[in-house]
Amino acid sequence: MDDSDFLRLLTIQAEQANSFLSNARKWERERWVCERLLQGLNIRHRDEDFTAAGQEPPDVLFRNACFEVFFVLDEGRRLNDEWREELERRRSADSLSELVRRQAKPKRIPAADLLERLGPTLRKKAGNYRERDLDLSKLDLIAFVSLKREVLDLNSHFPPPTEYLRQGWRSLSLVGPTFARVLFAHPEAPDFLRTNLGRSVIFDVGISL
Image (cartoon, rainbow, N blue to C red; front, side):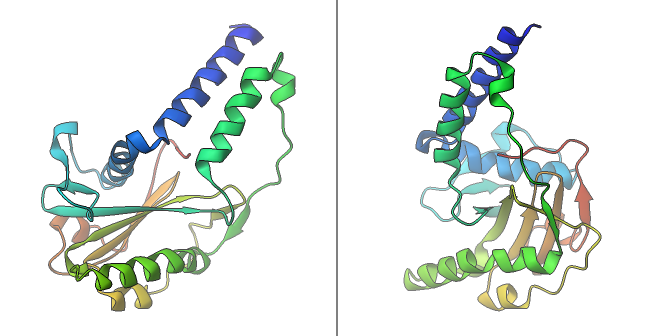
């Protein structure tokens, strides 16, 4: 494969990323996050095992799980804008050297810092859902972490997610490019979440957005 072929491949990949991040594929994107969690937990599944709820939340139904998905990004980062710009950059490049960028090495952060990043979204969701008289105790949350400037130190201690437990969710799981972890799962949560509670799983191949 020569440089021009590789440039075409990179452009096609950026086009696919833009399509995947479109509003039209929102549910497919949320299902993909659920699949990453299930892969980490070694739970067998097929595409037909997932269905969309008649009314959100939840986002994705799988067996007796009611998954509500949200993304955790670097402050000020917007995936749609980022990939649109990247697509134009790849389309206009005449050589691979034009695509080279110097990027600082991601900072390693402890699990406690990462859990704090969930706070703003979870507080907002909890408040909004209560205003709508929705039962938080029937929702299984998945936070998908996609950070560029920071990376989780998997050797760090995960503190009890006390604040999020008090909000009343049925379960809360964390999925990153290279890891998955069930942070908490109440007795009413699906068995496959409760049996994997507190165990960090490392993926063989990292995938992010």
